[in-house]
Image (cartoon, rainbow, N blue to C red):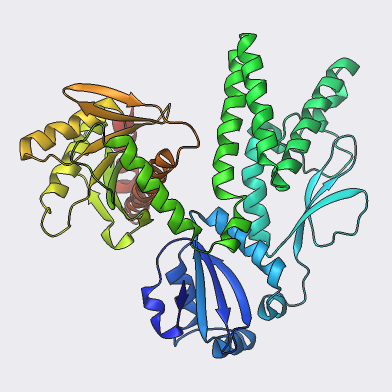
Length: 457
């Protein structure tokens, strides 16, 4: 989608990649953003502290093209692919002659995973290049949660800090006191993690998925259910990764991929829900709700709105909930929905309401709907099994969709965004409350801390 510098106020507030072009259509610069409107607008503000190179870049921009994506993670990888493909002039000179970064995996008994600015070591495998340390850090941080690895300098003399976090498992530093047989078993496990890590970085996700699926079934057959659950968790993370990592080439070939994907998600969700809601013909607008609190204190609610599958942040709403005392998820959801339904005329109305929760939360909302005579479809998303919960003729049913379902993906995106929005608002209130306490005289401050502690116990 193309914009002019004079029309950047209409840019969407979603993650994506932006490309600057000069008057001849030559690409000048590629960048990524959590919020396209905010990031691109920062280049054109009258009061700015840009360096001379950036000011020169801005003076040459004639048009702006954006590619919408589902997450910042996808934006990071797409930015790297575009820069590597087109090598825009200003991406190079704004690096101040620094080399781009590579992920380096050494070839040794326990391969080490590090970051390098050079790729000329024949005894290592390199992936990249990537345009920034942020890109590499985000990618490795996520990958490490799926397949742990060691980043310590060799030789490793003792277990590292990441061992205790489960991010270096097995750790080469643990081998010293192991028998030869135990060492061989752990070495095979470690090298398997590295091979699968390489496969993911090479975008061979199907290979990894098939292996994990087979391994999980084998463990379940042996009744090693704890191991099977760990493998299932890894498989779920790989599935998530597929949606956020390996589609960069698809975005290049189809810049409207995000829009097309969101349209497909809406269509599939309509098909899934229409048997339960006869009047539901198509879905354009969806609202999702979540609450956040600590022991019933500073309770907040959040409403996020997606229109045609895209976050519409102008219609997001925050609620400072009045429900106090012990944590009462159901009462909080009820209060939030009652307050939302007082704005039927001025906030518009969605085709579907989504509640972050299962049958109990959904039942609480349905009672509010009955009281206010609202018949709009409302569904819940149960957290543990990622099942959609619906009510039909007084009975509650669970819809278990495949992990790769586009309809489920849309609901998960809504749920994740409502959780983020609620949590960020709650964090702000907590910080404000803490600052108010700290600013008081020591005697009063101590009394408030004692009071808060006794309430929590």
